[in-house]
Image (tube, rainbow, N blue to C red; front, side, top):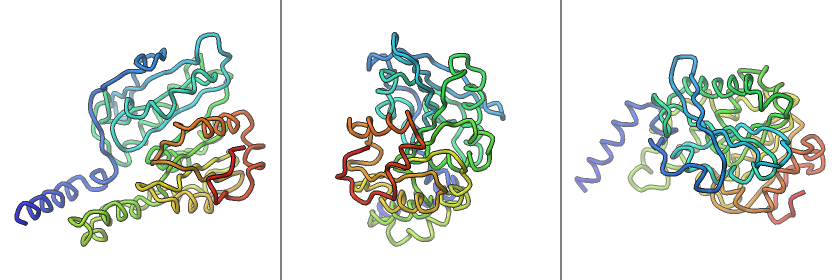
Amino acid sequence: MASSLRALALLLASLWLAGCSGLLFYPEPGLPITPDRAGLEYRDIELYAADGTRLHAWWLPAKAGVHVKGTVLHLHGNGGNLAWHLGGVHWLPEQGYQVLMLDYRGYGLSEGKPRLPEVYQDIDAAFAWLDQAPQVEGAPLFLLGQSLGGALAVHYLAEHPERQSALQAIALDGVPASYRDVARYALSKSWLTWPLQVPLSWLVPEGDSAIHSIDRLEGVPLLIYHSIDDTIVPLSNGQRLYQAARPPRAFQATRGPHVQTFSESAWRQSLLAFFVAPQAYVERLGPATESATESPQ
């Protein structure tokens, strides 16, 4: 019992000192693998945020001999680093999509510590790099945000409408609608933190949550994926974001663990169809799909 109380005291102290960062960001330094392990061509990219923080990213070109159909900016979730999230996009280069994968400050080989609002400078640095990359010129630009990466993207784009106009479409996968609600849900799953889920969750600032910004995305086709089986960010988050978003938008319920959507071929094909004709896709999908057993369109 004494050891449990000490652990709880340490948890409270660390969360108090870290503020929202202690509940939002779980970076892992270093890179256990690189894309060549998956047989992918890649290039290490060095970026600099406005405050001078050096960031690391991976550039995955379209597979040699395959016509380039577009560029995807990938923003990953709150745990690990680029290596942990390669599974979400490794299949895109073979389909003709070049990908920029960004590691936020403090993740992988990127310097600094992840905090809000500084992390938005990292997203800005990724867009700035894409602005000047000759291989991107003339190709449609898409954003794929998974989990926390999607929430960061929504708030960033709401604050930078000029970046919205540069995007052909936005896809979100397993994105939390409310940081505070998801923190409370996570804390409720442990007997150690269950009694403190409400006071601890109030350490998380709510103003940056996607639910407060998503209605400021205008004119960009939006496709929201969320798994019925998600035990990290419950399905209701994706449904709330869909309801709050402006058209053109669509919701697609899926199955499987948190942000493992694109391990399934059917949902890969769904995303590719969306990228080919975003407006037509969301119109065809129609109202929010409640069943994940329907065939992707």
